[in-house]
Length: 177
Ligand code: IMP
Ligand code: MG
Image (cartoon, rainbow, N blue to C red; front, top):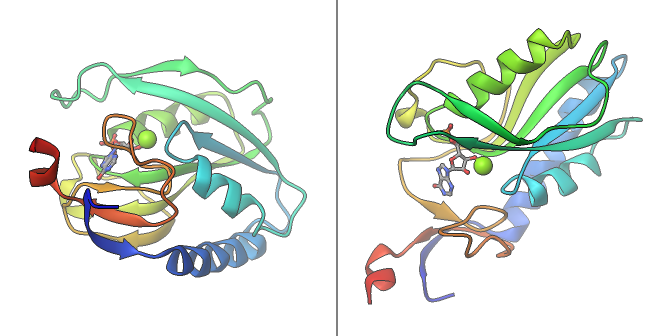
């Protein structure tokens, strides 16, 4: 793909990492009531791979959210599609593709706590720690990356590149051509 100037993680890298996370989750959630909540649309590939690497009788659902205004730091998030699964008594694991400012996840964590989930934790494939505006606890992180705009494996630039099986850095000069 000529728009991608650097491959950060190959399909093989991702597979290995997801297996590791799955193993850890299998052990951590052994005696729990696991409900995976994937955040649309970016988390779809990660969610699909992660759930199949967790050797437990789990449930999963999806949620779609949008930020009111990406430029403010209010953390206002609107729910476009909610989950239909009952939350009470469940151990929720939010599944995200990438955590940037942390505003989306800070909001989602509060929502699930207010709905009386038994526990709420976060897993993300990627994290950009330098960009954080809110200090949230992310228990399961695949990789920490520098402040670069990445695409692939669910992540997009204007809805493009989500279906790439690897994760790469977008060539912003090539986009302008
Ligand atoms: P935040 O943590 O609330 O700032 O937002 C995280 C969301 O921003 C992610 O779920 C992605 O949809 C999007 N995002 C942040 N960084 C990137 C990136 O490098 N590539 C693609 N999407 C990104
Ligand atoms: Mg997202």
